[in-house]
Length: 240
Image (cartoon, rainbow, N blue to C red):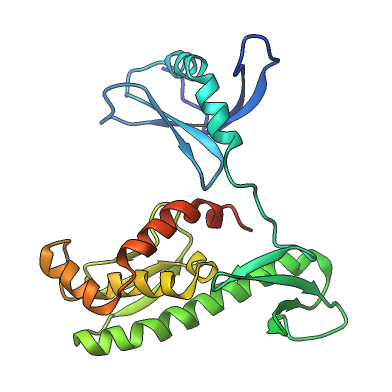
């Protein structure tokens, strides 16, 4: 059986009376899949088609064609991508900050008067914004983790940043806490909840009633933060 391409653009018609439209598709083959399936990835803005081991690509194309209207509507409803560029804005702690490019200054990127000032040449603006956000995310996450760790009597082996698409935080068996750097884009109380959640796993590596009692002891925003991430998390993944 021919190998699947990792990704490609396929023309789909959402309506027989309309011309075809380009649809970004990622192909996945899974030995555990029992049928062809598709899902929208809101972070990457494409549709993922999963095939069982012996299913031909044409079966995936057939499913896409059958559900073309639904696929194109869902893709069209995704939050638009937001580039890190001069004149744009970026939320930091949930508060929008305009990106102000000042090439004649030095210092990389820093906050000043409610704006994110970026120095240096224009081609490096996006990279410097990302570098600043990652550093700020780590600073805020470490600061948020400290009182939770002290209250629960736990110590992580390390705190690391990742650019995960499906998880905002995780706790490994070696007691390493990992977080998406994009949490810095969310309101502070959302970041604090995610940090409290993962720190609680250092006491209870499960989702038992005891675990949730620890989480609610450390954060009053469990349900509100979860709902906020459900509603707004995909848009954070589309930034930068």
